[in-house]
Length: 203
Image (cartoon, rainbow, N blue to C red; front, side, top):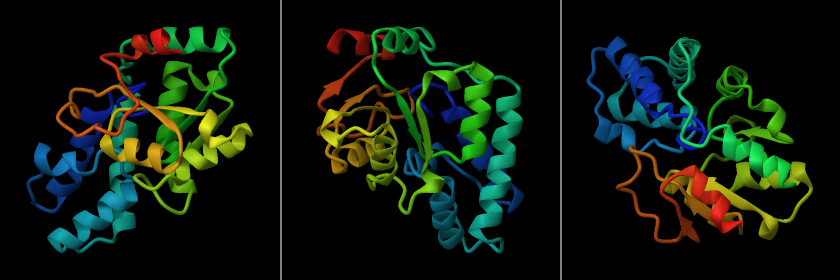
């Protein structure tokens, strides 16, 4: 979802920046880059330990989620090709699931705001599985809900953590780097696309 369907990386950075500012600490784009594709709770655990923050990772995550919901309420920004590409895939008979590291509340808010929920047969959050990306759990859960084998799945990702999760799941992966992930290493990707509409040319 983030960085593939919705240009939410700026929202995510701002929300975490506010969490850190609450504790009087700076938060840079460089530090934020390592958390792209990870679950919020895992990111907050790392930040809490790294900076010795007095609040629990769960409290930090709650602060982040509330900040994100406030930003999403102002209107999420769809990525190029959304919803047109999804509508064309659906009409062509492709079955789609959404597997995101985001919390269910954030997924629901984005999908509702962009009217995308009916396009997905299954929606899985990284908060609903044992391990977040780069572990494969969220993609394996999505495939299970669709009732299809891993080798029959194509994952669309924008981050290296997501790519590693897809490959660990035994799935084909097409990366569509966003402005915040273009510098990342995508050597294991099966396809590299400039924008989501290019997906239609490889299917």
